[in-house]
Image 1 (tube, rainbow, N blue to C red):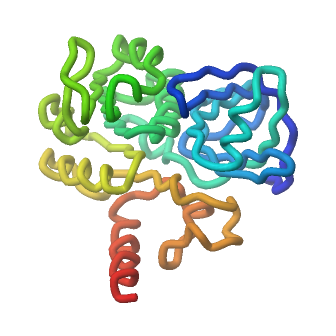
Image 2 (cartoon, rainbow, N blue to C red):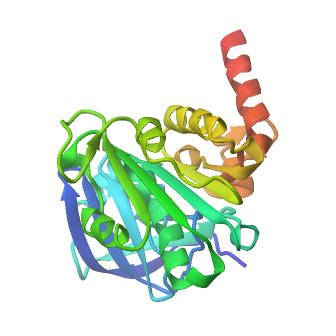
Length: 270
């Protein structure tokens, strides 16, 4: 049973990727499944939900953007300091259903975190999955996260990075993710797509997937940005009759799309 009381764990290392994004490696045995999330807390400050950025039973990695009180307090911590975590929570990517499929994985910004946990899982269970296409989008080269891993993944998978602001370089192309995908089309037969990032980006990418022949029942969205308490108490992540923290954060798009549409309609009506 998942506990609702946080436990104290020691930070093993902290790696800085940009001025406002750090990767915290925490020694623990929580073993979150790809796509699930954790509640991270700082005593006296508060707690915040963070997606797991790794798949390992000896540690968890937290890709963290400094955007609030809790994450700001985390940025004052270093290796050897302690942090409190509860979880993991939610329903992650449908690992069993994805077996034998080709995979398209798409992420924008810090949405790369849950996708990274899935990439790690595929690496450790490579024989269970077909070909893999990965598309990442960032504003510019300075904003690229996990660039050291991206270079290694390029040797294993079909991986492309798009920059929306910078000029094209020998390493990266200029363009939005859907434009990069249009230039470097993935195989679509027996293929499932996994998306994480801003919802506007996921909508645009889903439209591109439709052009390639991939239907909504073969597309999964991560709505991890809507997370809050982790057990459906606060209601902030509620979409119609589902709670993202309990029923998600991973949803098959044909199932969640009508609920998102109804939510948007209700907001406009109000």
